Image (cartoon, rainbow, N blue to C red; front, side, top):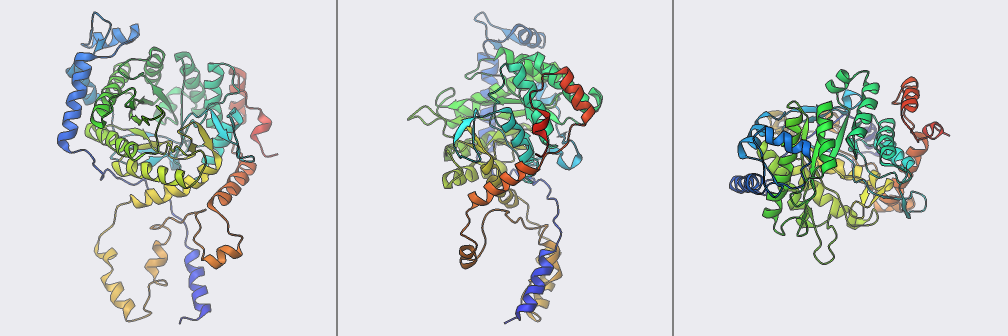
Length: 508
């Protein structure tokens, strides 16, 4: 047996290896749909757009689409001819970047590169102290942004909860954007209920960037927009938001949320055809508004539990449906986002773990550029949990590691190393390659327990929940970043009704 002192020295050498920032994996290897399947879904979607169309199109949308060859039927449905959809698909930008406030957090929307983040817009939060559900507040949203700012495997911050202490929609939209931008330097995704609020948010971003031109060169905020009320009906206000955001140069998430068996057909194929048609209609609108728009294809069909009518975000059917929707984005080579991680569990427990891991893994393997709601959400997106953010960060590290390509080269096959080792020490723990690759090739969980049973018991038998809760509490008590310079903060507070008190934004 190797002497204990030798083992300790080798462990010290290994543990001293520096951490390296891991690149986003390029995936897309999981393909639940065949090439023929995707061609049939595309054909069905184009037929729906050309012959059935969408209802409730507001006047500006009607005018814009008709001017490009569309048609308004006698019963008020707006038709999108095949040539218009194909022209938009031909002209839409690919391979752009959603930026962080620094380049370390840039998100390349290209070639099935995968990034995972938050989201959910939940009305409730799981209180970190009492563990009870309560209405979410602006301070909770700011806390969530601060926590996500420290978690390496959560790559962007999508507005995760609705601040229910805001009294008007304008107050909500402006303060949500402000709290997110104040809490994290990662890319921020938020929402706006009216086009005037989009202009307010854009003005805020332009001030922070230094100018509109500087922001548009490195956009650090994008808009989540649900432009359709399935089945095949426009949301007039959301369409206005979509076109306004596109014209102002903000990246726009063109999202659709049909529920299979409720607001879309009960079959996966039918649900995909309708959802794809609705999403393409939004992509066309964004392209008409601004041919240089950074538009993200956001088909995110959801599964309904037909026994209750509620969402079944943690089901196996949801996981395969999400993967197929992501594959359709690959069919068009469009930058894309989807939802995965919408567990039905009410707390961060074993049910949440397996439901999130299943759906997020399949979305990642299918090649979604952005996987929103991948961390922090509970109860079918009805609640946000700080504890879950921390646990899910560990989970995402493992999922992204599993999606990384396997490097097969003469060096990695290591035939010479094997031959030398079996005739020498007889193990690889102290080999220079092991030391060099231990941080670059492996992801170590911060909270999942890998102690031997006797050590675990001696340390008080901690659970992943107790460890995560402690991390969340410590982070939220100490991490108060200054991402908005004081002078700009004062200007923002003078121009807008900022409701987050300055004293809440610094360490007590």
